[in-house]
Amino acid sequence: MEIAKLTDWGLSEDQIKPLIIAGPCSAESEEQVLATARGLAAINVPIFRAGIWKPRTRPGSFEGVGAIGLQWLKKVKEETGMMTAIEVANPTHVFEAIKTGVDILWIGARTAVNPFAIQEIADSLQGMDIPVMLKNPVNPDIDLWVGGLERLHNAGLTKLAALHRGFSGLENSPLRNEPQWQLPIELRRRLPNLPLICDPSHICGRKDLLSSISQKALDLDYQGLMIETHCDPENAKSDKDQQISPDVLKHILDGLVIRNTKTDDVNFQRELAELRTGIDRLDTSLLELLGKRMEVAQHIGELKKANNITVLQSGRWDEIVKRVHMRAVKYGFSDEFTDTLFKAIHQESIRLQEEIMN
Ligand code: PEP
Ligand code: MN
Image 1 (cartoon, rainbow, N blue to C red):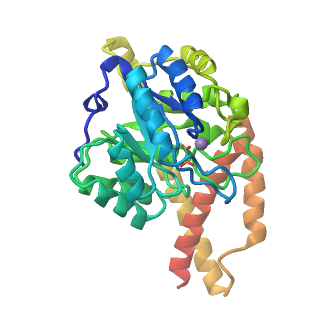
Image 2 (image 1 turned 135 degrees about the vertical axis):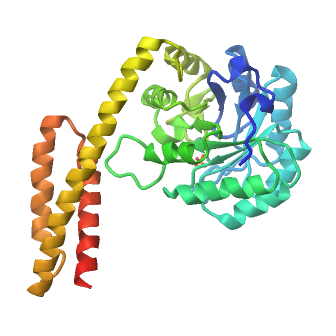
């Protein structure tokens, strides 16, 4: 995929270290939009975001002000010089946005799950040069995310970016949406030139974790952050728990550590290369060990087959889970890691045993 650089969006090098996009969840009134924009312009935020049409989970919640809000964004642009960005969910939204000079569009997480909707939006953008950011779909499906980007790219758009806002379905977590960092990491592997922007607001759903999630994203080499900001967060009409004032945003941004992706320091490079050789060796040993474990599992498969015994012995699986969790404690692994690792190993054992039995 041919993907334009963020500087091709009309941003300067200074504005993309990292790129900050901020503004309210929803445009609510001309006063609220302009007051928020002034606060953000004062701290040099280059892109102002606002939701005009809001995809709400249940009807009856605030569903956005509609096209009138686009006039307010026009004023933001005239008065502050900031670029403006809105969410579009259908060709009518696209048409209205382009007509009023919105600079950047994004497609929301609920729209991103629907290939028909993305295709319609892509078709309506055919031949245009506008930057479009695609949020991850609410369900953790990397192919759907990539597929959406491909649809946009096939329509001739090259100024593309991915917005990571987390995945729904979290229980017992302080976060609103599960980050599942391995998905954007895999997206980066597949599309290395695609700018990746984190939306910590929708991942967190609260203010106090914004800074740590933002830092994590920067440490994972994200190119930007989109953070919901409101001039009067306590009275916001949507997502009030996660919105912060421009002052608080400044405080968070000032506290972020911006690291380099590389260095010319030869000592660092030598030491890193040595450690990585060590990692590669250990990975080989891990594979060898897993191979041996699978061989034993295959013998067990043969034994079960000969005795006409089911592949899954749930009591045994429970025993393994308890045992490995107890032992993993001493290595400081998270429960989630131990769980994921052994589920994957167990699944593969089952697959191999199935192969033997059938
Ligand atoms: C938003 O950015 O305000 C929004 C609706 O986000 P998402 O599509 O990620 O839920
Ligand atoms: Mn929101």
